[in-house]
Each structure stands twice: as C-alpha cells, then as structure tokens.
Amino acid sequence: MKLRTALALSMLAFCITLQAQLSKTEKKIIAEVSKNNDEALKFLEANVNINSGTMNFEGVRATAVPFEKAFADLGLSVTWYDMPEEVNRAGHLFAENKGTKGKRLLLIGHLDTVFPKDSPFQKWQKQDSIAWGPGANDMKGGNVVILYALKALHAVGALEDTQIIVALHGDEEASGKPISESRKHIREAAQRSDIALGFETSTGFNNATIARRGSSGWELKVTGKRAHSSGIFNERVGAGAIFETSRILHQFYTDVKGEQYLTFNPGVILGGTKVDFDNLLERGTAFGKSNVVAQEVIVTGGLRFITEEQKENARAKMREIVKNNLPQTSAEISFIDSYPAMPPTDGNQKILAALSEVSEDMGQGPVEAWDPGRRGAADISFVAEFVDGIDGLGTMGRGAHTPQEYLDLRTVEVLTQRAAVLIYRLTRD
Image 1 (cartoon, rainbow, N blue to C red):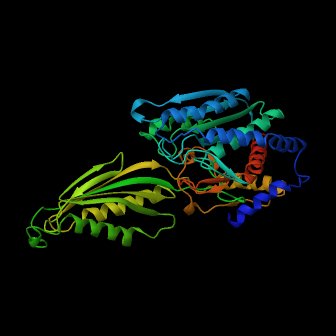
Image 2: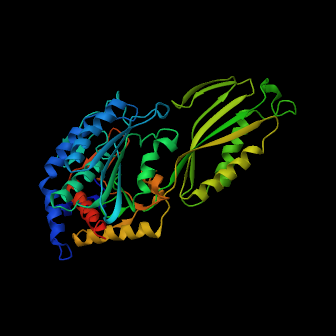
C-alpha cells in the first residue's frame, strides 16, 4: 500500500539512536513504551472491536470501561459523566492525577466513532503493518497513545506529584447540544490546566497542529409566491423561491468567498411547492411541478473559520446578502455554533517547539506546524480560550470516516514514546 512520503519516516521507530540530550529517565520511559507495545496493540484491537458510533450509547460506555480500569491502575481518579437527557449523548470519561509539579496538563481524546451500530465496517483486520478498523486511527489509536504514555511514566515514577487530566469525550464526532452542557466538564478542566495536548490522528510523522478552524452550521429559508409558472417575473408573481435561493448562494460564492481559512458549504437543498425537512436526520422531501412557481426552499450548510472575528464578519456579509430579496420573495438565515476556532498563538508555537526538541533528541528530526486549512474541527478548540495547546499527537493512518480507515502499526510505538517524553518534560518545567 502506497503511503505518503512522510509516513515512510515512521520506519525510524526501528532504528532510533538515542542522543545524549535524552536523560537517563527519558531513556527508561522510551524502554517502557517498547516493552508494552504488543500489549498496547492488543488493547487497541479489543477496543476497536467494540462498536462506539456516537449514537450507540451502550457501545460508547463499553468502550470507556477498559480505559477506566487502566487509568485507575495507574492511580488516577476516574469519573464517568452521564449527559442530561436533553443532550442525547452517552457521556464522557475523565481521569485525573493530582499534583503540583511542572505544567498542569489536559490530555484530550474521544471514545466515539462515525460508524453506527449497523455499519458493515465493524472489526479489526490486520495485514502486515496495516490494521483496518472503525476508529483505529480516529481516534482509538490516540486514546491508546495517551494511556500507554502515562503507563510508561508511571512505571518509572514520573507521574508522582504531577497534575494531569485525561478527557475522553463520547460525542466528538457529533457533539451534543447545548454545547454549554456537553462541553462543560472539559472547559472546567481547562481552567485548572496550563497546557492542552490533543491526540487526534497525526497528519504527518513530523507535523503537529497549532491551529484548527472552528465550525458553524447555517440554515437558509426562502419563500416565494406560489402561482402558475406562466406568470413568473411579472409584478404580481415575482421571481419565486428557487431563483431567490440561486441568487443568494451565487452571491455567497462571489462576495463572501476569498479569505484565507474561511470556507462555507451548502450541504443540503430542497425546494418546490412544499418542503419537509428533518434537521436531526438531515434528510427530507420536496414536492413541486414545472408549471408552478416554487414557494419554499431550505438550504443547510456549514461554515469554517480560523478566528471568531472571521466567523462574525462572514455571518454579517451573509445576512446582508440574504435580506436584499428579489420581487415577491423573502429569506432568512440562522446560524448554529458548533466548534469554536483554535487560532495559532505564540504559546501554541512554544509547545510545538518543545515537541520538536523531543523529536530531534530522539533522532527523528524537527516537527513543523500543519496547515490549519487542511484539518477539521476538534475538541481541543473548546479549551483554546483558556490554555495554549497543540493537537495531532495521535497515531498515523488514512481513510478516517470511511470503511477504508486504517492505522500504520509501525507508528504506534514511536509516537507513544514521543508523547511520553513530551509529557515528562512539560511536567518537569
């Protein structure tokens, strides 16, 4: 299987030459990760084989159970937070080690996947150094990196008196609403932390993420005057809902598009004489005839942005376009906040520099920032206003969110070692 050029660098895991810059303790940490690598892969395989599609609440809860025991065995205080009924999600697993040494860390992962209980893609399959499986890379692999990095630190006594909180959400792939409730616990944890480390899938062996775009939903509703099509464009009938919708979407494209990192996408459109749309299932039906001027249109879409200012500016432009209607039509647009932006900061860059130093000290070369325009939103964005952080510290593979999702097994050991040494250094600082 052909892998990206950067992925080939993962073979360095088999030929690491520890440099003098690594301390005696760091060398012990690396050795512990190597000793436990086979166990880590078996743990991961068993976890992947538990379906944990976001709406499979029993599966999400079952996925958390082995992590609960493993974190408790390391001496962490473990808590499962059920979500209120109105949030309609399984809940979240938090584990905490309390101490006063060094930086206070928040380690972020998630238990759920995009594959529902009835998905045909259910089980771990392995061939040579590649393993396919639902969530193998996004992001049960990253959760295992967190666990086995902490396990190595515990084995050498490096967890003692450190402040580390692990947050594994049960709804990252489709966050529960209201956000104020579903992300309450991680935001509280962030306010007791100095640095956040996200273990979403890695973009490249020598890359990490210092900025992620936020996401927002939008819904456009357009109304026209129902009439026989022979009268369209006259003063009494006007342009109809579909022509007005076309005008709005075209003007979004010409007048709003263009800023770096700003994108927006109309994902669903229904129009005609009558429209029925289910927002929860994101599906619907439309009825109309070619000789009847369309009366209703609904469009739903998404908006991506790198700062809150960019988001608000884009929304203002879209509102202005929506209100300048064609004859005998009206339109309204509404926005729903989802993930906030994680803008690049000097603090994020400093953490990346610390990771890069670890990588170089391990003989693996520098780590550079990944283009935020090529990454989606993630849970680390919810804490960006409180702490500096980086993401993309998880395992490597491809095909996330598809039945071809796979993990490069050669990367698990070395990326766990790198994460463990980074955590060690940050908690000594």
